[in-house]
Amino acid sequence: MSEDRIIAVRKNKTIYRDGDRVLKVFDKSYSKADVLNEALNQARIEETGLNIPKILGVTMTDGKWTIITEYIKGKTLAQLMQENPDKKEEYLNLFVDLQLLMHSKTCPGLNKLKDKMNSKISQTDLSATVRYDLHTRLESMPKHNKVCHGDYNPSNIIITDDGTPYILDWAHATQGNASADAARTFLLFSLDGDTDTAKRYLDLFCEKSDTAKQYVQKWMPIVAASQSVKGNEREREFLLSWIDVVDYV
Image (cartoon, rainbow, N blue to C red; front, side, top):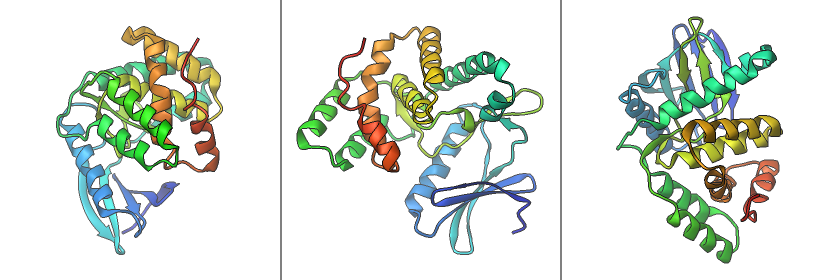
């Protein structure tokens, strides 16, 4: 292949632009099942009508699994926020509106969020007592079937030149409770040290979705524990600090 440029390098994968296509090339150590599941997630999300890059194929590149999607020209919402700090509130509102649009969709073929979180919590090295408490709390939460992104942050939103937003990276998509997805986004902002934006995001999400803030906060220890499995040491330490937080002001 003839790559125009590397778009991003992430753990276990490199993302290239090749003309009007994007090639996400996974390391040889990456699970075939995970690659195919990601491609299937994206194909299923296409059917919801959301603006996302279309899947063009799944192939092998030099012995490595590769997902090919269409290239969407534009800037990420993260770039726009950085370049236009005076418009940050406007961009945050767009960010939340787009997330709520996503949560208005259903996609029965996706894995269930609760099943994924239960599995992740079981993989942690937390004590049996803490794991039991987290499993119990997770099972007590209302069961929903809304489309949840699982890694919803401004870097995964592309805004085209004509202002059309596209949502990228559906590797972690599930169906479940939207407030769990919001808790994950809040923790992502917090992990970046941007606590002011995290708080403003949560305020906007709760206001626009008519959700009690305490309800989203009840998800945070559960989401933090499930995400701690794959984080680096700094992220893991931060996420685990949320697990003991039971009562919120």
